[in-house]
Length: 224
Image 1: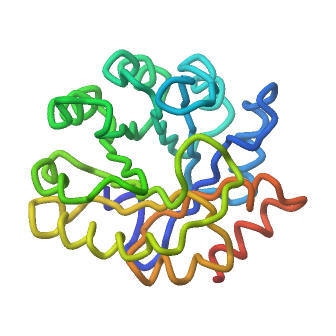
Image 2: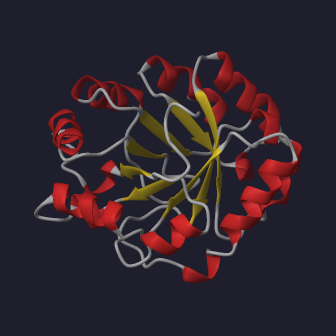
């Protein structure tokens, strides 16, 4: 993971959830041109979360529009049925939720076997202690600071304390090289605190894609 980020320079990963779903190839290219370091794909199945978004074919279209890494965040009930397809679509990282699998370690190792980086997403109410048992198989932990499912939700500040706890668990249990990502209401007002608490990647949806000038929004996140 060291080639993706230096610990003192957070990556900016716009979420495509607020983009024009009929033009994601060009939207991906636009965000890359605006200075995005990677792109975050919110994959929802209408079961694990109430929203339905897109599948691996759409991820492949995004990959045609951008050369920066793609992180497929699988908010789905059966991620084991989808990881091969998203790996084949060109996603660099595949992130899954532990709430939907009885075999998280096996799933993470399968993602790595496919040549991808393996991520774990933690819902607001999901305790991070489970990471001590899978840390050696984890490349990224995504701390959700909203409840998954809808874009544009208000940021939950009380979850900030989860970040240093996740970092401590990873470092103490063989996951020291794993990156820490934050997703949910991330903007220029909270970016500095999140980075100070250990965030390596800032996933930002509406703050970037809803801006009339995404490049300026990305600059504001960096400068915060």
